[in-house]
Length: 359
Image 1 (spheres, one colour):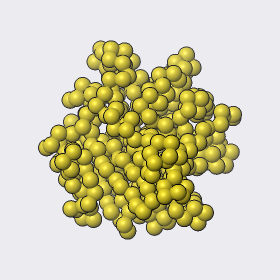
Image 2 (cartoon, one colour):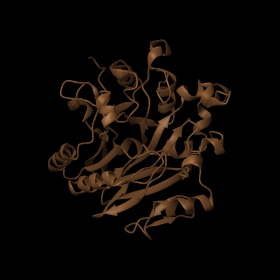
Image 3 (cartoon, one colour):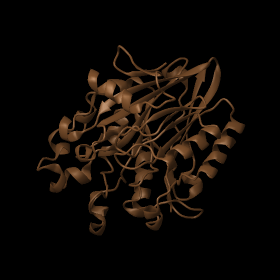
């Protein structure tokens, strides 16, 4: 299995922002070709064709373009339509064009994506090869999947300069262990392609090795985990605590298509699930009674400290007509309440500018 080498994005602060690095973390991202081309889901209107891809970014493009770059969870293989086997097309099998998706990711400053999720391998190793190569040729870094476990486990790395010193950000993508996907061969192995499985012992060792080699680094764990439209479970909580104890500085989860709790554990923030970003499927918020919210998390790194800002967005496409937008005043208060835990109580506050700040 041959991959085009993936570009590692190295950002020097003097080129973009003189003394800090601003990174956005986005939730589940898929423009929805498989849904929008299927009459069972699109209600007879393919919004990709009618509106165009730029329309989905309209309300958040200022935030995206105002940061150094964004990282997203890309939930689809990128492969030419003619290469999609008819036998693989079915409910909840994702695929996307090799030209359009990377073009619009790059246009809106999404320069790195995790592939550690349950859709990257929908079209097998062939789809994975196509995805990694396509992204690389488009100047977009990918992580969390590869031609073996060694490649899949490599973190995304960015450098920045602050106070005359070089610092590094590491982002590790992983997908929690599910028996169904183990049987389907979705996970990477010693000599097998796939996504990086969340093994707390292995991941904890990896975090400790990064910290030992680079004590001033900032390590983000970016896992795909949790049950759709449900609160965080004990598996997530136990894993998150273990990884923070191993040295992780921040955990930002995705997969549930809704927000889950935020927790301050041993001085480190855990966002168990930030829900969707642009995910053009109908969704099941009404039937599940889940909160129709997602989070865009802005991490600002600089010498002497970090800053987190949270920008909540409305993600129920049935109600918003596929127009991702920021929450209104009542919605954002409801979102803060849904994030609340005993440890985070009083520490999450709505700012006058309309984002959630951490006290």
